[in-house]
Image (cartoon, rainbow, N blue to C red; front, top):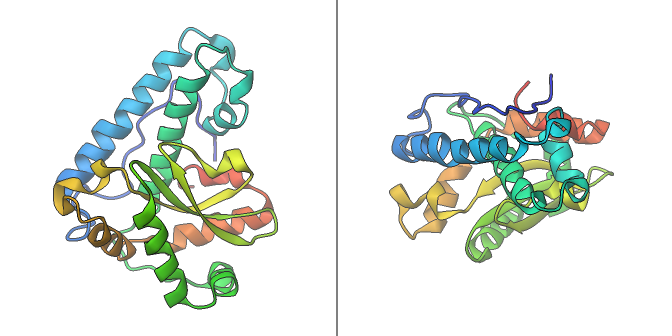
Length: 218
């Protein structure tokens, strides 16, 4: 897989806009992907265009080495690179087909959370407590231990030394057209469309130390 770099492109959804119905509605998928993610892609390219020496930097490098960028674009690049990275993981982390939690990811999840029921309960509680905009991440440390990490806005686990496995977008634009203020209903619906096969692939890469393989589908 070739890592993305400037000019970044709006990658297509790995399924049709209506493929996640009735859990995630078509209108939300269209606006969330084409408009919200599209705006992050466009803005990131605008910021990087005047800096040719940054044109071969990947999303991950723009995030991890952000403090080495020209000071006047650091904050905006971090926000928009994070917006592209996080949304790519979010969209590819869902599937219209039923997938199964299995293998090493299942073993690790049960080891670190005890039972599926305890994992689900903890996940929902933490997602509900996120104030305002952000994501709840299932991430792995360098030993493969799984942790749940709430992060604001477009922050990523990369910046705190963790490998992303799965992320739930709790910005209101991710669910408000269908679920309005009922975030709990959105969370419950999202659990029906998790792409556990993709999450398992990301966890396998984390165990191998290949977190850079986790930005987009292979």
